Length: 430
Image (cartoon, rainbow, N blue to C red; front, side):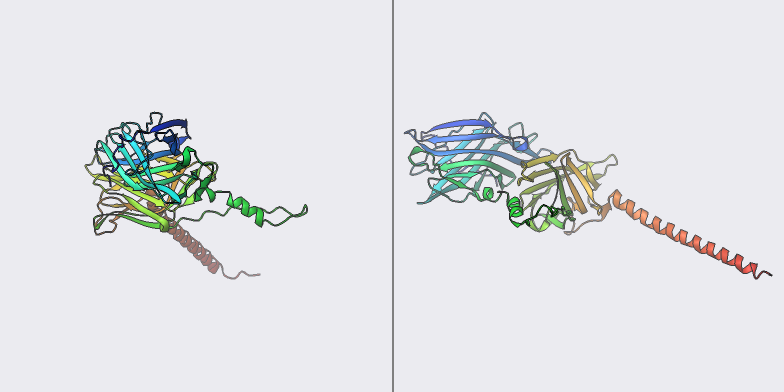
């Protein structure tokens, strides 16, 4: 929920900060590495941090539709308010960037450890990236930092990309190097690596090396075959507006990702969290599975020339935080869709496999789909309009049965005629 930032800007606490910027990686996660060296009045370092970050923000437009905006710190970053702290204020690391956006984190410590405490992020929807935003002005979200305690006089390092979700904002962090409460003004040479980095040290390769049988020159080399990806489980998803269900969705989901090589990923509904929003003309279904894969389906309502209203899938956005085959994290979207189209007040159904094109390198395969994002009555689906693929199948089945029966009748008739001719011929004299 958007609130005012609880952290006043401590302008009365003088400090000296050095801010350095370096170019980051490609794509959605292209950003600038922010390096901040917070110093006290004696010019001694008290906080050192270098990290990369991006923000994905979903906002409502004046037409009651929902869109995504991406923010990334750029070269106009400032650091007003960063402070080593004192008896009344906690140490604070704060930056400002873009058209009125800011981010900050404060720190606490015990006798042995330190950790981040509260993260505050303010984004300004007057920025041009928030096209046609319904709400104008700064919006602040506050969330507790999930970082685990780190030993004092130790530098925390984590290259793994991680995220925090709060309200309609996703915060992405990676390539983090951090030490708070620096002792004697010198950044420590001792490192503390995050668990995510430790778990990504080529476990498959090590297992193959230790378990593969020893072979001789005359022994054939073992061959491996990739196991085909099974059809995904069918999930039932729903959103509520108060006590009533406002969106229903049933489908199996499979991602087709073509980064280094094509990979099929099944979304497990048993470990997938459902969020989103319902509206009169726009609705969003967001699925977030346990492997940090985010899929946003945006539905819209349109008026036809016959003065009837129909809904359709207008936009899909996907964020894959966990890397695939060692590749970079991925964010992609398609906001120019016009599929799953049917009358408002009905549901759309397609049992056959369908493919939703997000980009050339990313597609979604759906199985046993049924969706109703508007006007759900009595918490259940309305009458379904079938997709063409299903109706075509239903049309062909009776035709095939009719052709088979016709062919059988012809065979019986031919057999009958042949039998009659033989009975008329009778016995021949020798």
